[in-house]
Amino acid sequence: MIWAGGGYGEGDAPMLTSRILPIRTYIGVTEPLGEMVLRHIPTECAIGDTRRAGNYYRRLPDGRLLWGMGITAFGTLSIPKVKAMVLRDIAAILPGLADEMRSAGRGVDYGWAGNMAYAPHFLPLVGEIRPGFHALTGFGGHGMNTAPAAALSLVSQMQGNLGDPTPFSQIPRPPVFGILGRIAAEGSYRWRILQDFRAEKVSQSHQGQ
Picture 1 (cartoon, rainbow, N blue to C red):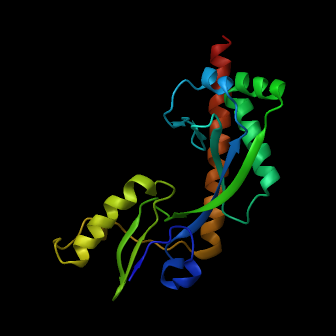
Picture 2 (picture 1 turned 120 degrees about the vertical axis):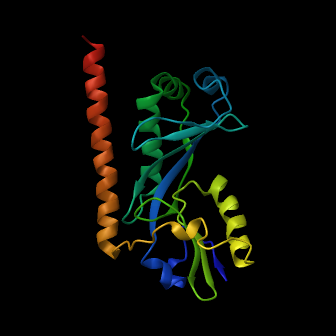
């Protein structure tokens, strides 16, 4: 059996609850923005900023803007709160676009949350957990490109086509320590926000000199 549930279903796989934390993240999608989004984001590529606690976003084919941001280790945010956060972050990062959106009366149509699977060292958990049970999880929101490659490696391992030790078996599997792990994850994220805030203030002060 292979457990590839990402940040979901840990209650059905208790052997993973001590190794993986489900961390909540958030995405919003604006109303169609037409030409205004083309003026401010003249690329179809996905964009991620350089902050430690950063945002990521991209234009959609119908002229909407998809915007991802934030994590919480406890509970979840309401959909109105997610939409408000999207508008706040657009205003902070793309103020010109935010101004045009306000002038045109455009807002955020959709908002939702989803779970990502994290290990304490931010590395994936791939391989046998107990006899007959294998895991393919812990990609921390980066599984779209890496999980398929890891799956091929896992299948080769299960077929006996890889030597010992296998590449993923050399990655440690530290415990997450339950509620303490969640507190640490939330604290780490808040600390990164503070570091970003300080770095931006220092940069602004240097630019003003």
